[in-house]
Length: 88
Image 1 (cartoon, helix red, strand yellow):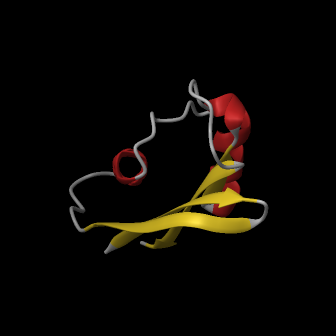
Image 2 (image 1 turned 45 degrees about the vertical axis):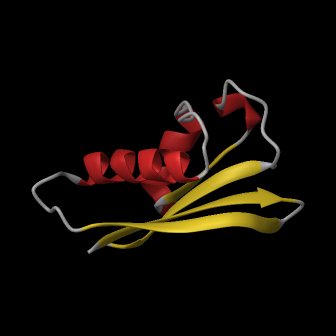
C-alpha cells in the first residue's frame, strides 16, 4: 500500500501530521503522490502548494520535499509543509 506522510512544522516541531494511504495500483506513482498531497492539504485546510523546480528535484532524489511560504498563495501559520513517501 502506498503511504504518504504529511506534516506541518513550526520551529522544528511538528504541529500537525497525517498519513494518507492509497491502494489503487492502477495509478502511477506521480498520480498517487499528487492525490496524496491533495488529501493532506484538504485535511489541513490548505490550498495546494505550487511545485517549484527545487521541490521536484528533492522529491526525485529523496522521496520527500518541503513546501515553504513561497509555494503557497496564502499566509502560513507554520514554517513549512513536508511530505514524505513512507511505503510503496
